[in-house]
Length: 483
Length: 104
Ligand SMILES: Cc1cc2nc3c(=O)[nH]c(=O)nc-3n(C[C@H](O)[C@H](O)[C@H](O)COP(=O)(O)OP(=O)(O)OC[C@H]3O[C@@H](n4cnc5c(N)ncnc54)[C@H](O)[C@@H]3O)c2cc1C
Image (cartoon, rainbow over the protein chains, first blue to last red):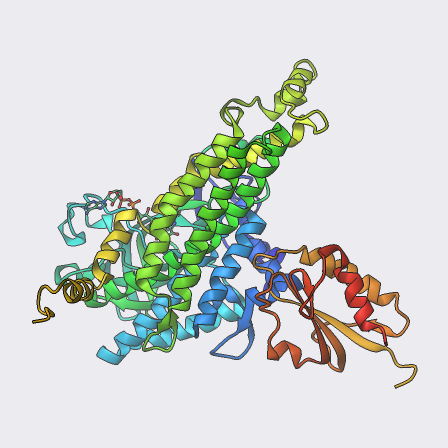
């Protein structure tokens, strides 16, 4: 298992093509725009070696029996699923941000099971290839991104109906030694500081979409793979040398997302896990989405712990913590957060084995979890902002606070209760600002799928007939009517 | 055996959402154990451990499992504000453990 610094070194050895603000980046591990995201992932390595977290963040490989980082594990029990949620909460508490490794982890689990099913039906070698990759990932402790979301162009059209077929990643050539893919994946978390990408189809597919049914592994510095890093709210603060103004300078906000372009990228067969089997795309999307939606009541609860703590501390600094409505709102924040946690734990406990032997959370409950996240995290932010006050949006900069002419005014007028320095209030406000304004919120809405995607799954999984039968029995209507 | 120090070790539950400051207790304990002439603090990976202290952040006590208990002859389980199922305030947990480690 790597430590954080070994992970940083491993990034320096790679030469991916990365662009940010119109410039080509030489070293992701050393550029201020990426350092917080690198730090956050590095912590998943460091804490796996820390005695306090070892029980959560390490396990034994079911393939080799070796001790591995939990983020490279294929779950083999409900206990594993629960452990994932707990580890995400723990890491959320330590980073107050996204630590990116869950996406590739979930992709590995989903691909593991779907390739097995594919092999059973079609006699394909995909599963063995995935197992080989998994062994490498576990031995080298690699961090893979999970690249599912295509740019999608006109959303009312299927992949094969688009005017520009590149709106979805697709196969442009099948060769003796591999395939060539073209297209792009959007919003990919940790894309620039991963070791490679697990590419998956974004939606269920029909026969006409065969060339879009592609799942493969692409190392980050493969020729033709271009990363264009996304802007975040207030990202210029990362580069200005302002520490307080960043709010969470160590770990930043969200995971650091990028548009990944695949410009005729060659993928050797050993890294291809689906090639044209459109009828398995839905299973892959559903299993990945279930695993990923399961997570959100883990990591987001960890973040909510930090946000609630910051809000409580700020209320103390501002002299409002004794007010009954403030206490009520703080309690409401706990209620919202723990409800999310309940959902994640519940869908994990109700998980079950797939034919490959690995475990998946209950899909219905996992979708409920994520749908709640799209609401509760916004409500958590609203309550935190309510308690924080308008200074959240109007506070002078750290530079003005340090300025020899006006600094004394900023210091004087930003003070809350007399015995706490203004700096404490400023730091707490900036942390809350980073966690509740802009990019961080959008992630809760669309990360792991927009709310409607969850509702579609609820529609599919709700067991309507059973519900109707229950009502019919009690009301004496329909087929089960008592005569 | 007379003259031989008793080997004591520490194992954490995993620290997902601790109700007590596990890291602080985990820092205080090795130092406190080292001050006792008949006790020796060792890593949980070592063998021949006499007592393993299982530090769990809450009453769920995830660390209290056979694979961990089996590493030592005896164990002391901290589960939130309790030591071996007896309520103990957080500030007194280290002292309570040291007391349990001392021969009666
Ligand atoms: C911070 C962040 C991190 C992310 N990380 C990852 C990652 O690591 N890996 C990854 O694969 N993805 C990632 N995503 C992508 C995420 O899964 C998508 O944002 C999500 O699936 C929505 O897709 P979209 O952004 O294209 O929005 P759209 O799909 O365009 O959705 C916008 C709206 O249009 C509606 N809509 C879309 N299509 C239709 C239709 N056909 N008919 C009717 N209504 C429609 C939606 O319901 C929604 O209301 C991330 C997103 C964010 C914001």
